[in-house]
Length: 65
Image (cartoon, rainbow, N blue to C red; front, side, top):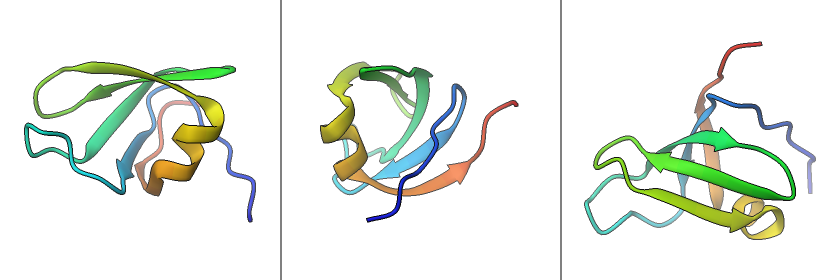
């Protein structure tokens, strides 16, 4: 499995849709845990790194830097 580099501001598509219907999330914290904000409804979730990396389907738009 390839090792991806995630940065603040990246927008990613997850495998499962959020109950609001959105599946695109903006990364707002990177570390041992990831914090992401739904771009549709604004809900914020926090997931362990391993879980987050398994759920990412693709990177939509890369953040700054």
